[in-house]
Image 1: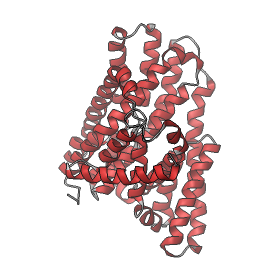
Image 2: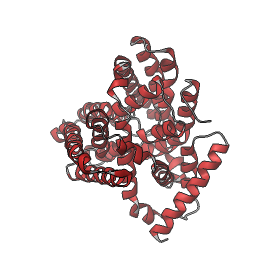
Image 3: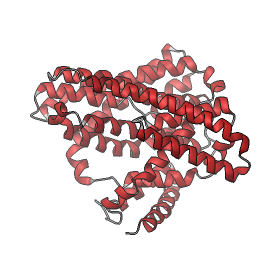
Image 4: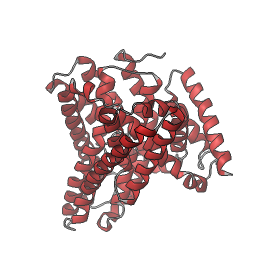
Length: 397
């Protein structure tokens, strides 16, 4: 199929799927993903695998815009009131998600596979570490769809933004431990590369936001603001790829600094005017990766990972909320908004796939993560919607 025609079909049918999803009282995100699954190569075949690869840059562009908007949602003025709660909840829920996933794999997987126990422990460490991350895209889409505002929403967006950084630190430690367990020693590259990536991303976000400060003086009107906003996000994402930095983190830092120090609020206003197009393309494309064969093979381990991650994040959020004396509404509901996962989780698993010593279990681990991502993207949006509505922070029925 011709690429432009495919994109038109994805947007149109994604939009119709979102309308049906709304009628059924589900978030628009769920409709986008289901339509993508129906169009996928493994179901209807309307969208081919080759076409998915050709439009992959669309996903990177959408993620850059979403990350920028997430960064822009982190107003220091609002965060100051919740800073203690945010830090405690972030650390406790990320830690328990990692621990619970790793323990469940160590306890249950020996009965499901013939892998040597040392490889099972290594796989448990890796899958546990990547389970700490939370994908910002679905959470932001639901927050914007229901115009949610309030303490829960502010804390949720802040924790989602911090989760990826915490996950990378956990990954560095667990990957090193995993290599020790299987007797291959510690690779300095595997230890320091993710940390260097974090620092590079932060510096890149700061640099690009400084450039936007100077551009602000010569930009007039929403059309020019939109042009500058998109071009700066494209530049940030592209440079991040060249520098082996994280485009998500770089754009989050960019958005955070623009919101709090540059005072270029129009950038967020104009991007929010086209966000439905971005969400429709991103989530519908995400659904096209659905593969029933993959799901069947990886389902048992994927469900173990999901159970450990959900219980770790939900229980950890509540405990972190109690320790930090967070309001009851945050303690009760914030764990339900931390379930989406995608970009960083998949990216770190692909990074591990290049380490030769992990070869015996990496195919199982990769298929498990891909299957759990699809299941999470279907199950998480309704739970996030439920949390926002129960907290009384949604302003659209």
